[in-house]
Image (cartoon, rainbow, N blue to C red; front, side, top):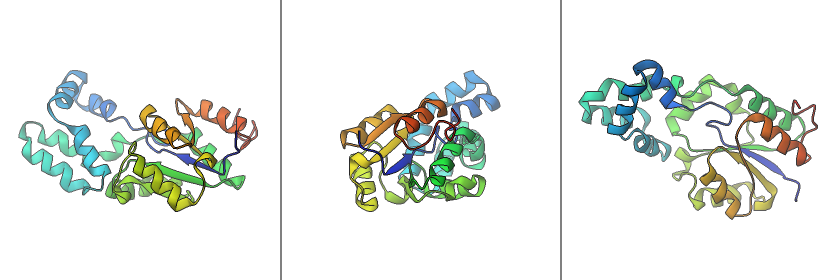
Length: 208
């Protein structure tokens, strides 16, 4: 296996917990949340944001068109940090350990332009990547092959030199199909072990 020349992190559920259902459960109860998510295409709305749609306007437009759930839909914007928290400290520690070892670290995330700008004010580590590939800026989302091609073109590294971790199997499969080294993220410990196996961190540096 080729030693990676850069490590690429997804953000949601790798570095920051992203669980809108959990937040809405805490505010509405599970039964009402299930009704909301069944009746309103919040996932589709968020997909528009990830493609570069304006954050507040996209959320508020759907709220205006759905008066029965208008207040709760607006929470997606107004209480967004509740949906995107907390940070996953051990993953952040791995990112920083890689940087201390001189390993380039990139971000590749489905994330809206304006929501990412807000996230930067809440999570300092988002400014520590060597390169950031944010779907809202790129106009394409994972797992579309085009987003991976754009990363390759911009960073100038061959696909086999990239080690990418993401919590979504379809995103991992799309990267793997291009020849990237991949790791399906199911927790920081497993990724720490992968980084050690790849020769990028010593066990102590990875917290093992």
